Amino acid sequence: MREHALELRERLPAERRERLSAAIGGHLDTLVGRLRPSRLAFCWPYRAEPDLRPWVQAWLAAAPGRVAALPVVLERHAPMVFRAWTPGVPMPLDRHGIPHPADGEAVEPELVLIPLNAFDDRGYRLGYGGGYFDRTLAVMRTVAVGVGFEIGRVPDTLPQQFDRPMDWLVTEAGVAKPRA
Image 1: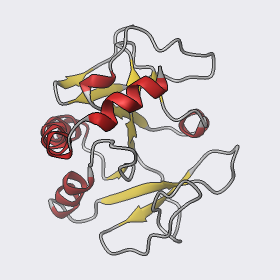
Image 2: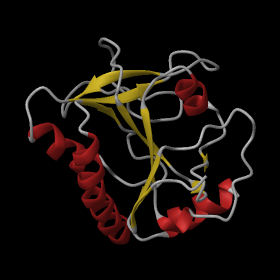
Image 3: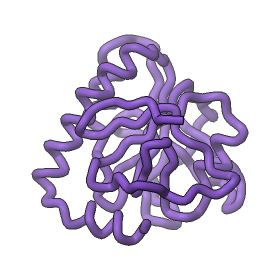
């Protein structure tokens, strides 16, 4: 299921992904405007995920004191930490080739934008199989917002006992609270 969802997403033309990402940004404006976090985390786009960087830059510029952060894997089977990000901050590549802030204090985000490879209406998601977000969300008090393209929606992700559903789902189609 994960590989199929990734294949579908990676086949989307770049221009279409850009348009869909912009639509997602419009829906994030609504949700984040309602929830009003001052610290949020997002993920650097990987394997044709929605590119939230332009939206995050606009969100940062809209009000002083806001902090955006990116996840950093310090240990393989441990929760991630989040470090502040601004355009131009040094960003070495991690072992997966994903840029992350080189150093800095840990940030405790009030809201985390989490990529969706495959996802269902109950808010469960399939990531890349490493369990990083599951371990991280298990020890954080934050709002988990799954962000992805509708092409990844499936009837059931077959969640495991340690999987945590998202608090919100945001796609190009809109914002939804997962059904119970």
